[in-house]
Length: 325
Image (cartoon, rainbow, N blue to C red; front, side, top):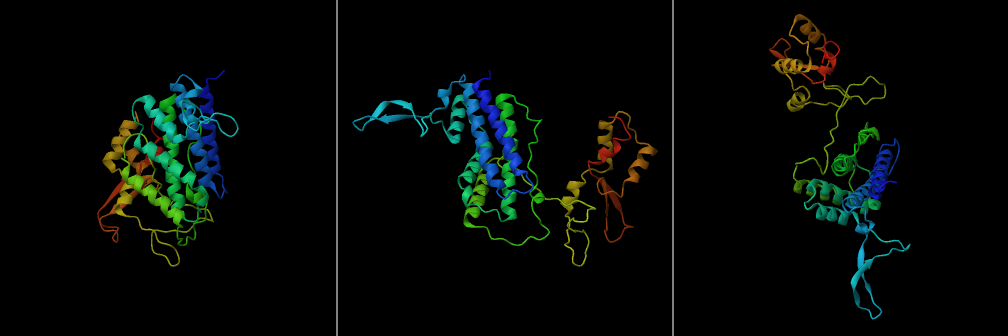
Protein backbone atom coordinates (compact mmCIF):
# COMPACT_ATOMS: atom_id res chain seq x y z
CA UNK A 1 0.00 0.00 0.00
CA UNK A 2 1.34 3.42 -0.99
CA UNK A 3 2.18 6.00 1.61
CA UNK A 4 -0.36 8.83 1.75
CA UNK A 5 2.10 11.40 0.49
CA UNK A 6 2.86 9.26 -2.58
CA UNK A 7 -0.84 9.06 -3.43
CA UNK A 8 -1.09 12.83 -3.28
CA UNK A 9 2.09 13.14 -5.33
CA UNK A 10 0.70 10.86 -8.06
CA UNK A 11 -2.47 12.97 -8.22
CA UNK A 12 -0.38 16.12 -8.43
CA UNK A 13 1.62 14.83 -11.39
CA UNK A 14 -1.58 13.66 -13.11
CA UNK A 15 -3.06 17.14 -12.63
CA UNK A 16 -0.03 18.91 -14.10
CA UNK A 17 0.06 16.56 -17.09
CA UNK A 18 -3.66 17.28 -17.62
CA UNK A 19 -2.99 21.03 -17.49
CA UNK A 20 -0.35 20.67 -20.21
CA UNK A 21 -2.63 18.53 -22.37
CA UNK A 22 -5.40 21.12 -22.14
CA UNK A 23 -3.03 23.97 -23.05
CA UNK A 24 -1.55 22.08 -25.99
CA UNK A 25 -4.88 21.20 -27.62
CA UNK A 26 -5.06 22.67 -31.15
CA UNK A 27 -8.37 24.45 -30.52
CA UNK A 28 -9.21 25.37 -26.94
CA UNK A 29 -10.52 28.89 -26.34
CA UNK A 30 -9.97 29.02 -22.58
CA UNK A 31 -6.55 27.36 -22.51
CA UNK A 32 -4.60 29.80 -20.33
CA UNK A 33 -7.22 30.02 -17.61
CA UNK A 34 -7.89 26.27 -17.46
CA UNK A 35 -4.14 25.56 -17.46
CA UNK A 36 -3.72 27.95 -14.54
CA UNK A 37 -6.58 26.48 -12.50
CA UNK A 38 -5.30 22.91 -12.89
CA UNK A 39 -1.65 23.93 -12.40
CA UNK A 40 -2.55 25.59 -9.09
CA UNK A 41 -4.28 22.37 -8.05
CA UNK A 42 -1.17 20.37 -9.00
CA UNK A 43 1.03 22.67 -6.90
CA UNK A 44 -1.30 22.45 -3.91
CA UNK A 45 -1.29 18.64 -4.02
CA UNK A 46 2.51 18.59 -4.39
CA UNK A 47 3.02 20.93 -1.41
CA UNK A 48 0.64 18.92 0.76
CA UNK A 49 2.37 15.70 -0.27
CA UNK A 50 5.68 17.21 0.85
CA UNK A 51 4.20 18.32 4.18
CA UNK A 52 2.91 14.79 4.71
CA UNK A 53 6.33 13.35 3.87
CA UNK A 54 8.11 15.62 6.34
CA UNK A 55 5.43 15.08 9.01
CA UNK A 56 5.51 11.29 8.92
CA UNK A 57 2.35 10.91 6.81
CA UNK A 58 0.12 12.41 9.51
CA UNK A 59 -3.04 13.75 7.87
CA UNK A 60 -3.56 16.07 10.84
CA UNK A 61 -0.60 18.11 9.56
CA UNK A 62 -2.83 19.26 6.67
CA UNK A 63 -5.94 20.15 8.64
CA UNK A 64 -7.09 23.66 9.44
CA UNK A 65 -7.84 24.15 13.14
CA UNK A 66 -10.04 26.79 14.72
CA UNK A 67 -11.50 27.82 18.05
CA UNK A 68 -15.17 26.85 18.29
CA UNK A 69 -17.84 29.05 19.77
CA UNK A 70 -19.24 27.79 23.04
CA UNK A 71 -22.91 27.98 23.96
CA UNK A 72 -22.32 31.22 25.81
CA UNK A 73 -20.85 32.79 22.65
CA UNK A 74 -17.23 32.83 23.80
CA UNK A 75 -14.43 31.05 21.96
CA UNK A 76 -13.03 27.83 23.34
CA UNK A 77 -9.39 27.73 24.38
CA UNK A 78 -8.79 24.47 22.57
CA UNK A 79 -8.62 24.40 18.77
CA UNK A 80 -10.51 21.73 16.84
CA UNK A 81 -10.56 20.66 13.22
CA UNK A 82 -12.54 22.96 10.96
CA UNK A 83 -15.27 20.99 9.20
CA UNK A 84 -16.51 21.78 5.72
CA UNK A 85 -20.03 21.65 4.30
CA UNK A 86 -19.73 17.93 3.52
CA UNK A 87 -18.53 17.09 7.02
CA UNK A 88 -14.92 16.51 5.98
CA UNK A 89 -11.98 18.33 7.60
CA UNK A 90 -10.88 21.51 5.79
CA UNK A 91 -7.23 21.50 4.71
CA UNK A 92 -4.84 24.44 4.41
CA UNK A 93 -4.62 26.63 1.31
CA UNK A 94 -1.67 26.55 -1.09
CA UNK A 95 -0.36 29.82 0.32
CA UNK A 96 -0.33 28.49 3.88
CA UNK A 97 1.15 25.18 2.69
CA UNK A 98 4.16 27.11 1.34
CA UNK A 99 4.56 28.86 4.69
CA UNK A 100 4.28 25.52 6.48
CA UNK A 101 6.97 23.95 4.27
CA UNK A 102 9.31 26.82 5.13
CA UNK A 103 8.61 26.29 8.83
CA UNK A 104 9.27 22.56 8.60
CA UNK A 105 12.43 22.99 6.50
CA UNK A 106 13.71 25.84 8.65
CA UNK A 107 14.58 27.98 5.63
CA UNK A 108 12.69 30.00 3.02
CA UNK A 109 11.82 28.66 -0.41
CA UNK A 110 13.10 30.38 -3.55
CA UNK A 111 11.70 33.90 -3.95
CA UNK A 112 11.20 33.28 -7.68
CA UNK A 113 9.30 30.06 -6.99
CA UNK A 114 6.95 31.79 -4.56
CA UNK A 115 6.45 34.75 -6.91
CA UNK A 116 5.57 32.38 -9.74
CA UNK A 117 2.98 30.57 -7.61
CA UNK A 118 1.60 33.89 -6.35
CA UNK A 119 1.11 34.99 -9.97
CA UNK A 120 -0.68 31.74 -10.78
CA UNK A 121 -2.99 32.22 -7.80
CA UNK A 122 -3.76 35.78 -8.85
CA UNK A 123 -4.61 34.64 -12.35
CA UNK A 124 -6.68 31.74 -11.01
CA UNK A 125 -8.65 34.04 -8.71
CA UNK A 126 -9.43 36.44 -11.56
CA UNK A 127 -9.76 33.94 -14.39
CA UNK A 128 -13.42 34.58 -15.02
CA UNK A 129 -12.70 38.24 -15.81
CA UNK A 130 -10.02 37.63 -18.41
CA UNK A 131 -10.50 37.75 -22.15
CA UNK A 132 -7.65 36.41 -24.24
CA UNK A 133 -7.87 38.82 -27.12
CA UNK A 134 -4.30 40.05 -27.30
CA UNK A 135 -1.11 38.34 -28.45
CA UNK A 136 0.86 40.14 -25.71
CA UNK A 137 -1.41 38.77 -22.99
CA UNK A 138 -1.17 35.19 -24.31
CA UNK A 139 2.61 35.52 -24.63
CA UNK A 140 3.04 36.73 -21.04
CA UNK A 141 0.87 33.91 -19.74
CA UNK A 142 2.98 31.41 -21.64
CA UNK A 143 6.13 32.86 -20.08
CA UNK A 144 4.52 32.40 -16.67
CA UNK A 145 3.31 28.87 -17.49
CA UNK A 146 6.67 27.78 -18.90
CA UNK A 147 8.40 28.87 -15.70
CA UNK A 148 5.72 27.03 -13.70
CA UNK A 149 6.56 23.74 -15.42
CA UNK A 150 10.30 24.25 -15.00
CA UNK A 151 9.84 25.05 -11.30
CA UNK A 152 7.52 22.09 -10.80
CA UNK A 153 10.03 19.64 -12.27
CA UNK A 154 12.82 21.17 -10.17
CA UNK A 155 10.80 21.11 -6.91
CA UNK A 156 9.62 17.50 -7.31
CA UNK A 157 13.17 16.42 -7.98
CA UNK A 158 14.40 18.19 -4.83
CA UNK A 159 11.51 17.15 -2.58
CA UNK A 160 10.81 13.60 -3.75
CA UNK A 161 13.72 12.66 -6.07
CA UNK A 162 11.14 12.15 -8.82
CA UNK A 163 12.30 12.01 -12.43
CA UNK A 164 9.67 13.52 -14.76
CA UNK A 165 11.70 13.10 -17.95
CA UNK A 166 9.20 10.56 -19.32
CA UNK A 167 6.59 13.31 -19.57
CA UNK A 168 6.54 16.06 -22.20
CA UNK A 169 6.68 19.03 -19.85
CA UNK A 170 6.46 21.87 -22.35
CA UNK A 171 3.86 24.29 -23.69
CA UNK A 172 3.28 24.63 -27.42
CA UNK A 173 4.38 28.06 -28.72
CA UNK A 174 1.61 30.65 -28.85
CA UNK A 175 2.11 31.07 -32.60
CA UNK A 176 0.92 27.47 -33.05
CA UNK A 177 -2.60 28.34 -31.92
CA UNK A 178 -3.51 31.46 -33.86
CA UNK A 179 -3.34 32.94 -37.31
CA UNK A 180 -0.87 35.80 -37.07
CA UNK A 181 -0.72 36.45 -40.80
CA UNK A 182 -2.81 39.48 -39.83
CA UNK A 183 -2.40 41.00 -36.39
CA UNK A 184 -4.43 44.05 -35.46
CA UNK A 185 -3.93 46.37 -32.51
CA UNK A 186 -6.08 45.31 -29.58
CA UNK A 187 -6.69 47.35 -26.45
CA UNK A 188 -6.33 45.29 -23.30
CA UNK A 189 -9.21 45.48 -20.88
CA UNK A 190 -8.72 46.76 -17.33
CA UNK A 191 -8.31 43.28 -15.80
CA UNK A 192 -5.66 42.29 -18.34
CA UNK A 193 -3.71 45.51 -17.78
CA UNK A 194 -3.86 45.08 -14.02
CA UNK A 195 -2.56 41.52 -14.18
CA UNK A 196 0.26 42.36 -16.61
CA UNK A 197 1.29 45.31 -14.41
CA UNK A 198 1.21 43.01 -11.38
CA UNK A 199 3.47 40.55 -13.21
CA UNK A 200 5.86 43.33 -14.31
CA UNK A 201 6.22 44.54 -10.71
CA UNK A 202 6.93 41.02 -9.44
CA UNK A 203 9.60 40.57 -12.13
CA UNK A 204 11.36 43.77 -11.09
CA UNK A 205 11.30 42.69 -7.44
CA UNK A 206 12.39 39.08 -8.04
CA UNK A 207 16.15 38.39 -8.17
CA UNK A 208 17.31 36.44 -11.21
CA UNK A 209 19.25 33.64 -9.54
CA UNK A 210 18.94 29.99 -8.54
CA UNK A 211 17.19 27.09 -10.27
CA UNK A 212 13.70 28.66 -10.10
CA UNK A 213 12.11 31.35 -12.28
CA UNK A 214 9.13 33.68 -12.07
CA UNK A 215 8.76 33.73 -15.86
CA UNK A 216 10.72 32.38 -18.82
CA UNK A 217 11.24 34.63 -21.80
CA UNK A 218 9.53 33.46 -24.99
CA UNK A 219 11.23 34.48 -28.23
CA UNK A 220 9.47 34.46 -31.58
CA UNK A 221 11.78 33.31 -34.36
CA UNK A 222 11.22 33.14 -38.10
CA UNK A 223 12.43 30.07 -39.99
CA UNK A 224 12.54 29.15 -43.65
CA UNK A 225 9.65 27.03 -44.86
CA UNK A 226 8.63 25.57 -48.23
CA UNK A 227 4.99 24.96 -47.30
CA UNK A 228 2.41 26.81 -49.38
CA UNK A 229 0.49 28.19 -46.39
CA UNK A 230 3.51 29.70 -44.61
CA UNK A 231 3.44 33.43 -43.88
CA UNK A 232 5.68 35.19 -46.42
CA UNK A 233 8.64 37.05 -44.95
CA UNK A 234 11.94 38.13 -46.41
CA UNK A 235 15.10 39.85 -45.27
CA UNK A 236 15.32 42.11 -48.33
CA UNK A 237 12.96 44.75 -49.69
CA UNK A 238 9.88 43.48 -51.44
CA UNK A 239 6.65 45.12 -52.51
CA UNK A 240 3.68 43.90 -50.47
CA UNK A 241 5.83 41.63 -48.27
CA UNK A 242 6.72 42.46 -44.64
CA UNK A 243 10.43 43.09 -44.19
CA UNK A 244 12.39 41.57 -41.30
CA UNK A 245 15.76 43.07 -40.50
CA UNK A 246 18.16 41.27 -38.21
CA UNK A 247 20.40 43.36 -35.98
CA UNK A 248 24.11 42.71 -35.62
CA UNK A 249 23.46 41.38 -32.12
CA UNK A 250 20.88 38.89 -33.42
CA UNK A 251 23.24 37.68 -36.15
CA UNK A 252 26.08 37.18 -33.69
CA UNK A 253 23.73 35.38 -31.32
CA UNK A 254 22.72 32.94 -34.04
CA UNK A 255 26.25 32.49 -35.41
CA UNK A 256 28.55 32.85 -32.37
CA UNK A 257 31.55 30.74 -33.53
CA UNK A 258 34.39 31.83 -35.75
CA UNK A 259 36.80 29.39 -37.42
CA UNK A 260 39.03 29.14 -34.36
CA UNK A 261 36.12 28.39 -32.03
CA UNK A 262 34.65 25.87 -34.47
CA UNK A 263 37.85 23.84 -34.70
CA UNK A 264 38.30 24.02 -30.92
CA UNK A 265 34.80 22.59 -30.37
CA UNK A 266 35.40 19.85 -32.95
CA UNK A 267 38.62 18.77 -31.27
CA UNK A 268 36.74 18.47 -28.00
CA UNK A 269 33.85 16.57 -29.60
CA UNK A 270 35.57 14.10 -31.97
CA UNK A 271 38.35 11.66 -31.29
CA UNK A 272 39.42 11.41 -34.95
CA UNK A 273 39.18 15.06 -35.97
CA UNK A 274 42.11 16.78 -37.68
CA UNK A 275 42.31 19.97 -39.69
CA UNK A 276 42.84 18.44 -43.11
CA UNK A 277 41.83 19.02 -46.72
CA UNK A 278 38.83 16.75 -46.14
CA UNK A 279 37.62 18.95 -43.27
CA UNK A 280 37.85 22.09 -45.41
CA UNK A 281 36.00 20.40 -48.27
CA UNK A 282 33.19 19.35 -45.93
CA UNK A 283 33.02 22.83 -44.44
CA UNK A 284 33.00 24.57 -47.81
CA UNK A 285 30.16 22.36 -49.01
CA UNK A 286 27.69 23.88 -46.53
CA UNK A 287 28.79 27.53 -46.51
CA UNK A 288 25.64 28.52 -48.38
CA UNK A 289 23.36 26.85 -45.84
CA UNK A 290 22.02 29.39 -43.31
CA UNK A 291 21.40 26.63 -40.79
CA UNK A 292 25.13 26.23 -40.31
CA UNK A 293 27.06 29.30 -41.42
CA UNK A 294 26.81 32.94 -42.40
CA UNK A 295 29.34 35.04 -44.27
CA UNK A 296 29.73 38.61 -43.04
CA UNK A 297 31.23 41.20 -45.36
CA UNK A 298 33.15 44.31 -44.37
CA UNK A 299 30.93 46.18 -46.81
CA UNK A 300 27.63 44.29 -47.33
CA UNK A 301 27.02 46.18 -50.58
CA UNK A 302 30.30 44.91 -52.01
CA UNK A 303 30.69 41.10 -51.98
CA UNK A 304 34.29 41.49 -53.09
CA UNK A 305 35.16 43.32 -49.85
CA UNK A 306 36.79 41.63 -46.88
CA UNK A 307 34.71 38.85 -45.31
CA UNK A 308 34.62 36.42 -42.42
CA UNK A 309 32.51 33.29 -41.87
CA UNK A 310 30.70 32.64 -38.61
CA UNK A 311 29.08 29.34 -37.61
CA UNK A 312 25.96 28.18 -35.83
CA UNK A 313 26.50 25.40 -33.22
CA UNK A 314 24.10 23.26 -35.28
CA UNK A 315 26.99 22.66 -37.65
CA UNK A 316 28.19 19.93 -35.29
CA UNK A 317 25.15 17.83 -36.21
CA UNK A 318 26.38 18.01 -39.82
CA UNK A 319 29.93 16.91 -38.91
CA UNK A 320 28.57 14.09 -36.71
CA UNK A 321 28.03 12.12 -39.93
CA UNK A 322 31.72 12.26 -40.79
CA UNK A 323 33.58 12.06 -37.47
CA UNK A 324 33.41 9.84 -34.40
CA UNK A 325 32.54 11.36 -31.04
